[in-house]
Each structure stands twice: as structure tokens, then as C-alpha cells.
Image 1 (tube, rainbow, N blue to C red):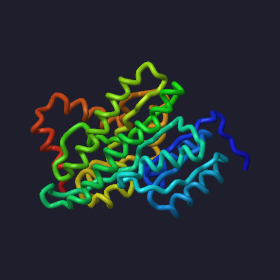
Image 2 (cartoon, one colour):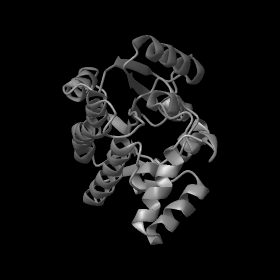
Image 3 (cartoon, one colour):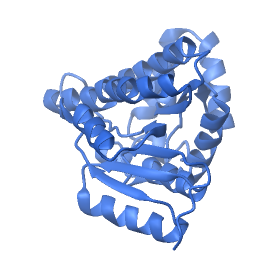
Image 4 (cartoon, one colour):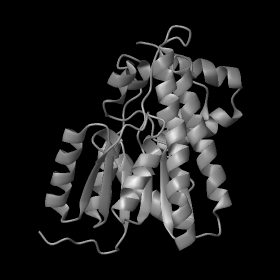
Length: 265
């Protein structure tokens, strides 16, 4: 099939082999952009690359990387430079959570989470963002969460990492206001992916009682928000109302309600 990158723009998406990352990669490819797909699993990544190239006629590049390792972000950037690709859209999506009482959860796993959810996002934004600023053109989308807006008992570290992503994204967006480069924090609520299984929270009220969003809807909303340069993108109207109500509620009540959502039904 003839390649059809109408804009000449290339996107890099981390965590692209499943869930929201796969949905975002699909959405971007559907609009005719070449994609660099990043995740740990080479076989799954190459399968996605083949499917997107065959369906949409764009160029795809599968670059396996474990971004929970300290040198992975730099190695990924070096690999993209070696491919002679200019990244116009950077989507920092890779991340995971872990449920449970903080004093009982695995510290090594939480350290990996901080490396992936926080440090890798910071590194990749700087490494790829500098070239965007030089070109005066680029879009960064960091996938945060509605978890970013309040403390999260029973997922304390995960919620804290997403609060970092939101704060970091908004701050850098303001710094880049006149550069032609934008930063968007996409903040989905509970979404139908394998996230809850990995985080061991499949039985929490958040996933069993409060309803989950479709990853395709989140991706479509996020893509449009990124192109518009929105700084904070909340795909769900219900979540927008929730965030507004939390701003006027006592912090202790917000924290208690967050715990109730995380508890098993």
C-alpha cells in the first residue's frame, strides 16, 4: 500500500502495544501520520506496527524499550536520531499502577513505577522537546489521570506520580507558550484496559461500580485536544464535574472518597 503521510509529521507513542497507548497510536495513524511505537514487548509491538502499516499505509517503526530502566529514555532518543526521524508528536503514555496499603506494597515495584511514570516522562519530554523548540513546532501529550487531582489512599504512589505528570505538564506548557510547542496533560478516568489487572485493582469500586471509559474515545478526545494545544484534557464530562466539586470540598473528604473508590466492592 502506498504510504500516505499527508502532513510529514511523525509521532512517537510509548506504551503503544495495548490499552490507551494502542488506541492513541491507531488514532494518529488513522490521520495519516507515521508512528514510532515503543513498549517492552517486541512481538506485540511488531504485530501492532504491521497492522497499522497495512491498514493505514503509514510508515511504522517498532522500537522495544523498557522505560523503567534508568538509561532507556536516552537510548530510545538515540535510536530515533539514528533513524533520522523528527518527532512532531510525542505521547508519553507508558505507565502502571499498584494497589494496596503503602506499608505492605512492594518497594522495588513502586520504584520502577516512579522511574516509568515520572522520570521517563521528564527525560523524554526534555530530549525530544528541545528539537521541537528549535523547529518551533511540536506537540507533547503526557498521559496523566483523574488520579492527578487528589491523593489516592490504597494507590498512594500511583496517584502521586500522576499528580507530578499534571503539574509538570502545565508548568512546561506555560514555559513554552510562545515557542510553537504545546504540552497537553490527558487525564482519563477508569478506562477499559489491562491497567486494573496489572495494578491488582480489578475488584475496586472505581472499576466495578463507577463505570469505565472506552480507550478509543479517550484516544480520539486526546488527539483532538493535543492538536488544539489544550493544557489539560478531561475526556469525561462526569470527571470534569467531579474535579470541579473536589476543588471546593474539604481535602479530608476528598481523600476519604478516593479511598472508598479504591476499596474492594
